[in-house]
Amino acid sequence: MIRLLLAEDQSMVREALAALLELEDDLRVVAQASRGDEVVPLAREHDVDVALLDIEMPGMSGLDAAAELHTALPGVRIVILTTFGRPGYLRRAMEAGAAAFLVKDAPAARLAEAVRRVLGGERVIDPALAAAALADGVSPLTDREREILVRADEGGTHAELARHFHLSQGTVRNHLSSAIRKTGARNRAEAVRTAREKGWL
Image (cartoon, rainbow, N blue to C red; front, side, top):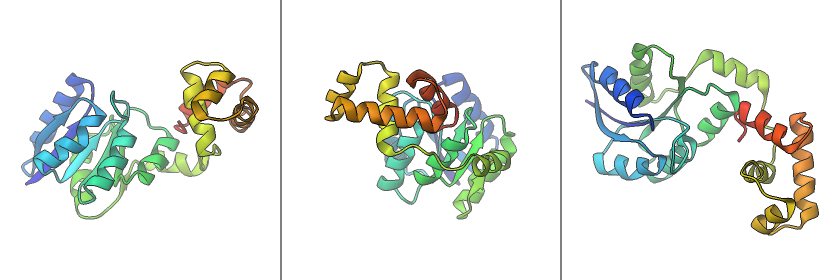
């Protein structure tokens, strides 16, 4: 029997997915999480084989939860299941240790098959998303530019950003200017929006 953890913050979606997976003779959903920061404790407590993680969750994103789970319990296979089929998310999921990346509109049978395949050591990636990721290329943003854009999205002046990152205001301005140029945006709000759409943030 394959023991599953299902992490999804929308309870109706989570319960529907759990019900569909339970129809399979060899799959059992033994733990459910509504927050990303619940993933590792629940995976440990319930001795799960495969964790299915949504990306957008409170407490911790599914990508961060995947990285933490991969470090804490490397034997647990990770499937990212998301509404957001963005190429940048795919790359970040693979870097975080995910073995599969599927969009939520995939048929339930495909999800069940993906669970079995990752447990067998395979990687499973939505074909259309894989093609888009190759076409889109790697994120051009540096780690610092990405961090500053994320923080800038929450608001704050250059002075506040500089204090938060322990940088000079000039350095913050340079990082923001570079991020704006790399995303082809006209201002930082547009840069944030473009980077989010591509899954770079």
